[in-house]
Image 1: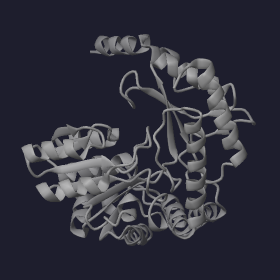
Image 2: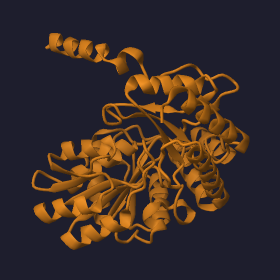
Image 3: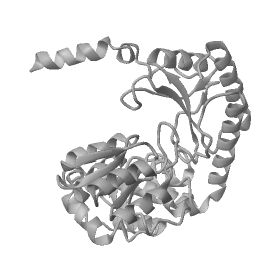
Length: 379
């Protein structure tokens, strides 16, 4: 068996991406413009969050170092979950160890081998993992294509529809209203991953479903707390009886240790700030729009929407390394995505805007991208 594992390692190592570690470039210097973080609202060092964590660590509460199923009467976590449910306009919410475990566990609870799961071909890997964990049959449909979804839902009948609100690699925005109409037409349930929209879109940042007035028609919502909420955890929200079922049945919930209390305190502080600070979302949108317009004007073939994620297509791994190096030589640092995060030969450099980036930095990014495009012919 070890020989087989070593053979797979050699096959991986001989590939261009692994051999050249294309996701890792040079170390950013003090002049670097960093557009790789998912800290959309620039909260990571917010004093209110730091203070909440510090008080929790030094306080009288002791951490619960055990499975989450044993913390059903832990006031701090339950209060936070109730606040999140209220924020989302949902009956209930459960705090998970990560966005990955939220998606994996939710689909385990919602689907089984008899359930067709209609999954956007570009959906996050955690959603695909949940389908596999549930033993369900994936029925992929074309990316962001309601007609493709309707065709397979009509063929296979009522099932579970899973999609991302905002896609993490490309910044594409889900045509959620059309998906909801398909779900209602064919008796389907929707699970929407709001990881890159929670905190960023909608009233008080409550997400895409809330922005479109669809919160009551989207059955389940999940999101990672490692984006706008600047921590490490996840949320699954939905009907209260099924959230309690999730808590005691989903394998990630049963067999993983609970989120620690100082993290819960930080999430609570972040939620309070996010609900109140509309100016952060306004700044993020203004700066995202500014950068996107500038890049479109230089000829970059990027999506024309209002997401803070902007994908610069590189194509092959080799070309994407060339793009990465050219940008980094001009102090512009994004994040490289390649297979398996993207389809093969569709690697890209992702630029992620945050609320505090200076406009002068965005001007420098636009100028650098224009020069790189002319010099390399990429894009």
